[in-house]
Length: 283
Image (cartoon, rainbow, N blue to C red; front, top):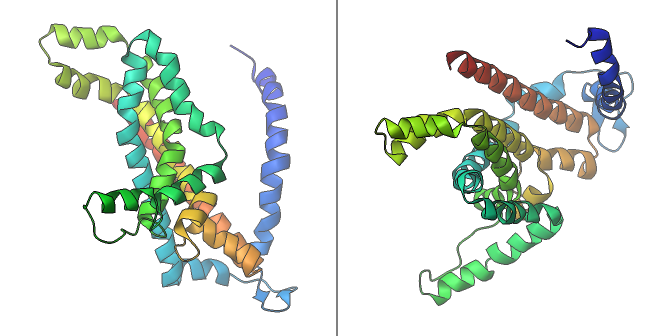
């Protein structure tokens, strides 16, 4: 076993990089979150207050944005799981000749700029976009359906963007499942459907959990796509933080919201890791 000293020496460069480029800037904003912003004058000197955090917990507007953000993260994670699992299963269990082309198809959208992909969805989902025009030409609708500046548009765009992360996590988990276990269940008379729900799906739970955590955290912190597809009125935590910093110049409120979002993400990761350990102990 590697001595603790050697392990610390190996991890030291990574720890220094994280401290220099992540921890220190975050800690520098912590005092700002307890400051008081005076419109037209900036941050009041020598004034410390908990008002910024109390406002997040008590103001109905902020609570609505928080619940909307959490609901968006849950919805995108669930949609990515439902859409991504069949693709991941096909990559992991399909013919070897399909594997590389399918992985390239999954990864290819990640090579495009995020703004370009969001603009592509604007072209598709606008009131006179391709989707609404097609539906009206087919006679399925008589007026355009509102697919942008609401939850629908943002969820569609973010699901498309973060779906590859879920698929790649699931592929790794499914490939780690021994085929002998599935073959043994089939030998005992189980149908393919029963083998999937009783063997494959439970054993791929670590990949499902890891992919869901990753997609959820990326979704609740996403800025560009919610800004473009949600518009200036449909707020989530990231767009609200951006407006507080850039448009209102209220750095104390923006810092408090940033720490609230970070604590939400850390709490979700911690709870998920506890759940994963409990599942591992029950296995």
